[in-house]
Length: 360
Image 1 (cartoon, rainbow, N blue to C red):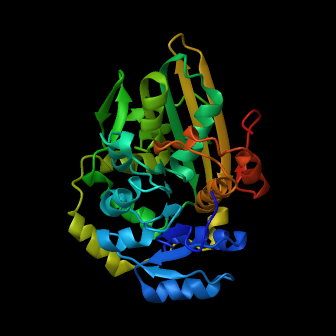
Image 2: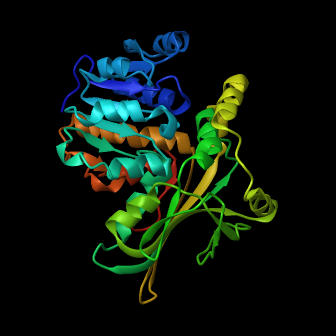
Image 3: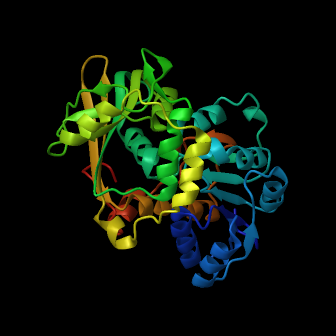
């Protein structure tokens, strides 16, 4: 695959993570198109970039506009979230075309519906979901550590964060999450569960003070359930002290209506964290699997700047595709495609991830 004049199109280019991806594509000097809704913001970003990529003004809720935008694309990068609210039209436009679609989706229900689509045998596209910090790294850790022929009692991911202020888009997605189904795997069955609704024991060396693991529905739950022989699967957010007390107190609260959340989001128009603040953000991610016989497999990574990690992951996939990587049609989880050679070394070299022994 090689990019033509409009070979790559970036939806949500003026959003927080979309802008980071646009800057990296610009540095790569491959032709791509900025797709955005706001002309002023799109022109401002275009002027910042050395390659001056063309701009396509697109409303992602309009099938005709989206269809025209992707008609000549070979690679579609969709950064417009929340995907449960705004992702369907782009997904519909891409799945029957000869192209590769990438998203940063951290929303379980959007991905669950993609994998469950009864027409996927007829798809012409490759759809790569969750090419982002959330879920991609956990899926890759599990892929490098676990055996698909082994029976597991549980496979879980655990996240901890410090100095972590989310982008406006992430904030909106989090606030809308209660309006869409979320899941964990229990006794081999995918079951509904709301964020923070239950806790899991922490049986590894967690960061100091992070003593409680609250359920937080990330897409890797679906990937673990689909690809491994496991009874249980979940993803969790590590907390301690006052944070844990606040999380427990928040259980059962009714979420505001979708319209009210969207209105408040538009009214506030907050800015995301600047680069210096992002670099001070810290995380740990642990993936732990327990075999039915009790043997544990645990791997932990630590790092910073989660939004830049997402941009690096997307660029890594794009470079592999432009280099000729061939992928199967249909929906794929992050670790299901062979484009990740060297990714841990790359993240280390950029100072974004500290890889433990055996990960690279």
